[in-house]
Structures are given as C-alpha cells and as structure tokens.
Length: 86
Image (cartoon, rainbow, N blue to C red; front, side):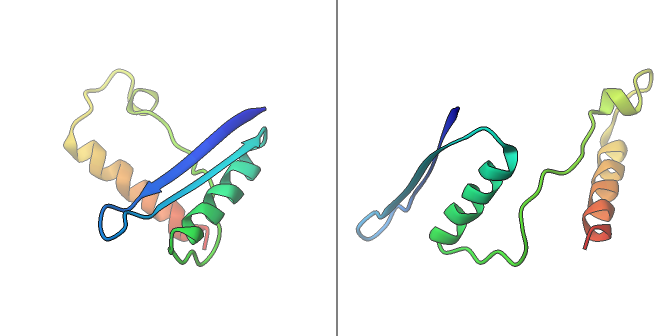
C-alpha cells in the first residue's frame, strides 16, 4: 500500500494545521480522502473529484511547433470537456 499525507498550514493567528494521512491502493480511495481533506480545511465541494483525461502537446502535434495559441486551444478543449460532463 501507498501512504499519502495531505497537510494544510495556515499562517496566521494560532497557525492551525490540518493533516490527513492514509494508505490506499485505488485512485478512487485517494480522491475520496482528498475530498474529505478539502472539506476538513473548510472548502465546500459541490460534486466529486475525478481525474481528467489529458494528453501532451507532443501527442497532439508531434511534428508541429507548439506555441501559445496551441495552449489556448488545449485549455478550451479541456474546459469544454469539463462542462460536457456536468
């Protein structure tokens, strides 16, 4: 099993610290624990966390030059995929 540790250190009055440590083998378990960790830090999550499919610029255009316009296009595609899943 793999051990994971998530830590949030607030730098301010009293410097509260939130730490979650757990063991997991499945990605679903890691995401579930990370969601709980974020909630413990005070974040409200309306939904669930998931891993988005991605690719590298080399896979998309191996022989072409990758520039800033390609980065914007990649971001647009990623955003469209996120909204399509809702």
